[in-house]
Image (cartoon, rainbow, N blue to C red; front, side, top):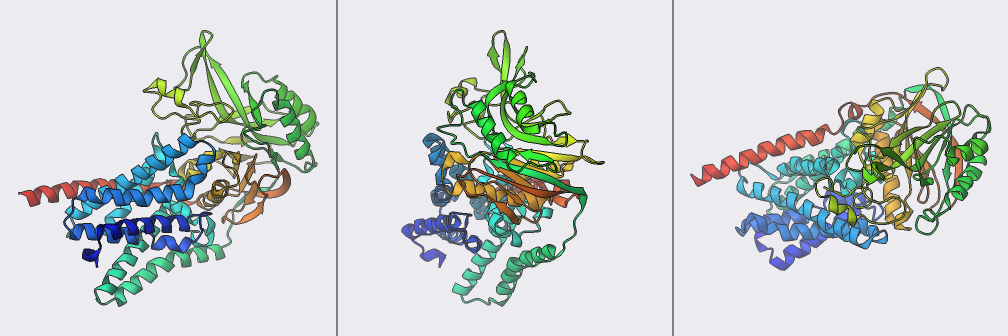
Length: 535
């Protein structure tokens, strides 16, 4: 069959793979089962090129076409925020995927008798691990995210993280391809069918068994949380001059509808305090307004809210420091933890959005900062924390608690949140503003990814969005509360505080590390085989 595939057919098969990946992804089709055969057409393209004796690099155009369709089909909504940023995301992310797939193809072609299609698993794990940790990080389309709307299939993410989903997807695709090959060649297929079915359904069975297991470890009691969704247009309202006080009062007005004597925490969205203020000036009007109108002497009440802030330094503090009147200032997308008893505490967003909050390699080429996308608020590289941090509150009952403040884009980084949990977080609090993309799959995908973090950490997730979707997700990834898009909303709910530690929290993205090591060994082995053949 592979030998009979012509050039036009190869490109059609590449398009088919891209379309299947798109249709399987959350909210651009949500037909999740299709992901288990999405790579099969591309495998047939690969087999055709090998049978024709084509050079290894020959697969690149077809692979690039597949991943370009996948990127555009699933994240086209980036266009609504910035055209140039969208083009860069589509072109460059597709390029990276195609490069790693081509690398896999070259190794497979050179060592076909020794290494099989299974080498794609460690190579693709290496790509996704790199994409989680390097300067151009953009892991939105990592394969494990496909199942964010099928959480009853993936309860085992508490052991593997989302990278385990990547292994599962590629393994089933390889087995499906091998089965189809044997079917066409009229070879015995009984063993292939059994293997394919077992690899496909065993993770689902394990997941359902974990769902039946209702064990839970609660710190001591519920935290009574009020969640506010102000619904302020990020383009037309949020960042206009002299609007911050009115927005703060609106937030207070909404929160007051649900606050009572039992309320422990009020959660507000990313940059709810939108006008930048100095973190060292505790007498700022924000504190006065909040203290006068929100707390009203309620010593029990705490506030976790997003804020645009800055600090002044005498000397350069980091790559984000900008010269200013004989010193430097540094801007932050921060989360603010506030109560009547304690000094205000800040934690800075550290997983930054490319092009808006971080200009890649600007520490080496400072002139690149002029290319920052202007979407309102602070643009250009922002300051970050030196490591993942949490808010510790020792005043709650007799044991206190820890909160993981997760600002927007940070919620797609599993290992980052796992570090926060390891440091003592009992609850994941996501503060976001998803209105940049409009009523598109973007905000829906972002909300669904939070379900993966709940499973990985076995922590409840409370999410406050300025625009987008706010809600509550339990530690099994089940959505218990979800607000409507583009509506003002406020609700209250008791949230269990948990303190158990999952295998994934303990070890993080260990599958990515294993993938990197195996890929290195495979690369060395392929070089050895090549030289052996040459001699």
